[in-house]
Length: 167
Image (cartoon, rainbow, N blue to C red; front, side, top):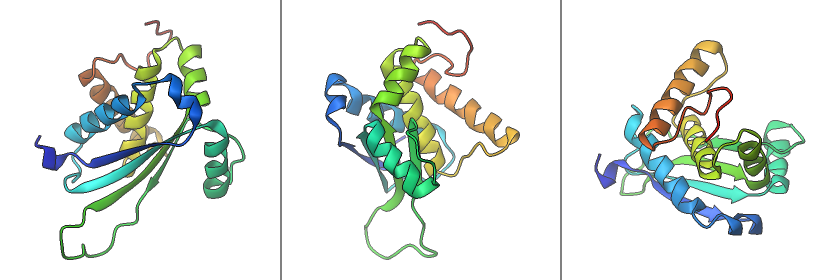
């Protein structure tokens, strides 16, 4: 994989609570790079944004876009793709991912996982949604979860779906 195959990823920290996780931006970049290397989607000359927010911020997004008035761990917003790519060198926008700190921290602690492992999983999960993967039915969920396992294994992260995991 060449640098041209890796989507440009902008990580925006919009909540002060992320200050306690100094490596979060690096973790997200590494996870997106690993995911892009393993998917059969055109991610070259593309870009995406990842917003590291808090539960209040993601709750607002969840309510406004999905009609669900509660926080969640990760949301993905795939960009609408034009029927024909415009001329020029402008990168194609894959979309946006939002990850909530408090929910991510709580899940990692409850599941006895290192925070950076869980953050990596959520970044990979969000990225896969941006490139067309979903888990709306059992077959699609099996495909997406298998790909998540494979990508995370490349990063040295154990199966996030294994039960009773202790790291």
